Length: 312
Image (cartoon, helix red, strand yellow):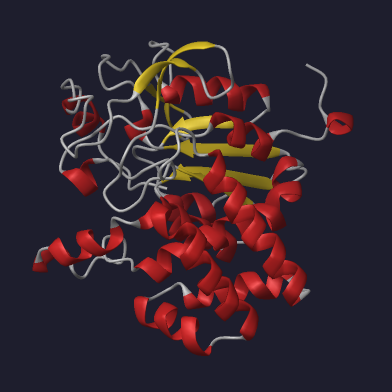
C-alpha cells in the first residue's frame, strides 16, 4: 500500500518512460493479457529493484504456487494457521528478529524459513545488492532496508493473511481497494479524478493496469481507488459502519503491502492483498517504470463463491 502522493506530483510523472528498462531487464511485451485474451497491457518478465515475482519464468504463477505450497505445508505442521501468522509477523518486523527467527524460532518457522530461502531465493536476488548500495540517508527506512529474511517472511505473511481473511473480506457489506498509481499507463495522459475516498480511474487507456483492475474489482462489488491522498490511519479510525462489515484490499510492492496489511489487522479490518510483480516506482529507481500484476490471482482473491454471488 503505497504512500499517498499529491495530484500535482501524479500529473508530473506523465513523462514517457524507457520501456526497455535502464536496469537491463527485458522489454515488457504487449499482447496476451494475464487472463488470456487480446490486450494492450504490458506483459513481463520485468525486473524490480529488490525482487521480481517472475524469477526466471515468463509468468508469476510459479512464485504464487511455491508460496502456497510452503504455507500449506507449514500450516499442516503447526496445526494453527493463526498462531503461525502471529509468529511470522512478529519475526518479520525487523531484520534482527528475522535473522534470529531463522535460528531459534519455533521449529515450524525455522524449517519454513529454510525452505523458503531455498525455493524463493531467486525471486529476491536483488535485496543484497540494493542494501549494500543504500546511501546513509536511506538506512533508517524500514521499507528500503528490509532484509532477505524479512522478504521471505513477508511473502509467507501475505499468503497467510489472505487465507485467514479471504472469506470474511468477500462477504463484507462494503469492500474497497487501494491501487498504486505506478500501475497506470505511463505513456498516457491520466484522466483520473478525485471522487469519494480518493482518486478514481476514468478508463482513459486500454493499456492501463489500473483500468483493468478497476473493471475487474467492480464486477466483484469492490470499490477501487487510486491511492493518492487518502490517509489509511484516518480511514481505519473512521471506517464505515455497514451491515456485513468493512473490508479492504491492497496492491503494492511487498514491503509496503505487508506493512499496510498489518495496520488493517490491528484495526480489526478484514484485509487481503496482492503484491506487485516487482518494485519499480520512484521510491526505488528515482523514476516510475512500467509494472505488472497477476490479474488471475487478483480475481481468485476477490471472487465470491458461485453460490453466494449477488445478482447483478
